[in-house]
Image (cartoon, rainbow over all chains, first blue to last red):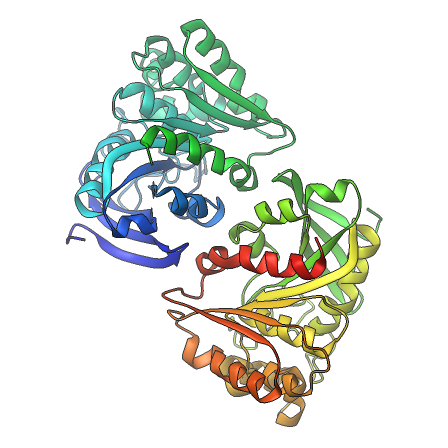
Length: 282
Length: 282
């Protein structure tokens, strides 16, 4: 570790380490905290990493505490990096009404163009470039990367992969917001971060991006059919139609009775880890 | 389900269900919430149950969200019942100073004899008798029971098993308070719940009870050697000495580098589940 990182916490976990670090983000213009699960293999040398993007209201902690991913990650020798879900701090403007679906905890993994958001809300560049660069300089983690996420973070994972061919070996999502241009959460966030011109939104919408994808990473998506946000915010059928129209590979699994919670994620995270590990050659 | 239980939440989990229920506790004189993990096998018929007793400040939720126990429980066909850690509600007196280590969230699994605690703080009778009775009447769970817990709940598990021969098929603990009569957390709690006469405390102290144990259930105990409470509150060597003196079977595993968190519990919960399942004949 260098002086770029300040240790916040360290817990032994399945023979490896769960660690939390604080650092100064140049891209976001604020201090940020992220978590890293380092499997036992990282003590012998650098290992590939899955970047996990969390959903609305989350921090780096939700996935690490609730997904139950460490056991198989330790077996496979894959690191997991979990960033926060927005810039934070007293200098970072949040939702004017204090709502939970915009601002702090709701960066939507875009680069904002509108004031007052543009100065700090550049989560795309942070999770795609700045954070991996930092991690690969300071932790025993290679540049073999993959990306996954949940809900808003599922949207983030799909968009990060589709916008950055060659950067990730695999991508997957749980209950992603696949078509943010067309649903209330996305309309609110994109309308503020990117402004009212909907043409600018298409660059941050998986259903729009998939038509122009030059890379054909198979998209693995799990979606519970008991998810209370299914019809209003998530609409996986839109992704299915867009993938079919584009001839893009998609494995969309509807999971009967499962909801939007981490109980759902935990139930299928091992399938996702194996999907990523195969591509990362763990 | 009968009208004894009010459903609070239900989440699909590993092919089974995580459910939370509210009910009126006669023993505690207040409403209580508990959680049940019901594995897929419970849809075909009643299954045995592990009762999990949590530590200071916890509710029914900590273990269910953070321990990662459901995957193996679903394979083994074992239910997990997680009660709250104290009586609750505006009518239940808490710590006079608002401390977190006494009162609400800190029932210590004893039957209080002193006022104003004696009216509500009867967690031993609740977790040993009332709750299993309710669960076995209303959920697909048999009377084949085992008990485990963490920290204050590890103390609770050891004491419940040692005080009630024949009631549990197996017992285990993570970082238990093995000798509450001799450590600050225990002295505070037992001194208030049971009064200043330390002779009364021995009936709630695993190190004291083990000498008179008539049943010889092997005690499985995991303890991290990086646990910040190890020397002040936990002192597993006291249990080792008491077990040796009594000729009582004890498997005490010191886990190098592990702390007091759920990252520690998650790392070894599968070993405990297999220990319980073997005794429960799952």
